[in-house]
Length: 148
Image (cartoon, rainbow, N blue to C red; front, side):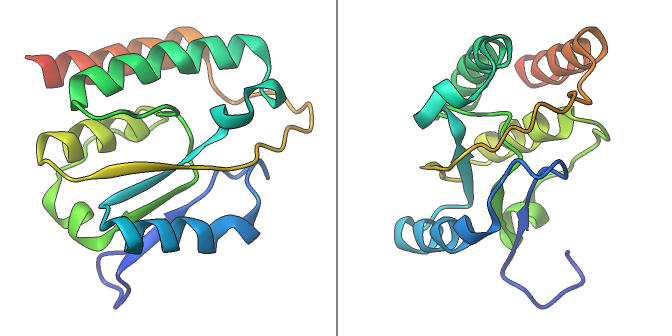
């Protein structure tokens, strides 16, 4: 992404959970509000999300919001617009699902504006690739590193 001539990147989860026709909404919101990161917010229609995932995401989002000092209602959503300047300004070391958290905390530390846009969540009853214990520990390590 950094070697390309583009202004930013769009990320999407690989499980088909996000509707690519909503990409223009993320771009428009980012341009209109001059945001470094635009996150999809699946919590706007939380009923589509399985209850355990919804509760876990709520808790993680509260923690990330507190540490980054910005309101982030869906910190684990992989549907994002990330401006090139944000990527150039942060050093990321994570290599699993914890990179989603690390990016937000690093951007918050650099005072990048982060906003959220309601997006639809598409669940097809497929199994999650998240391993709660392992990925939970990774999440806590990233948060602890930014609190230290």
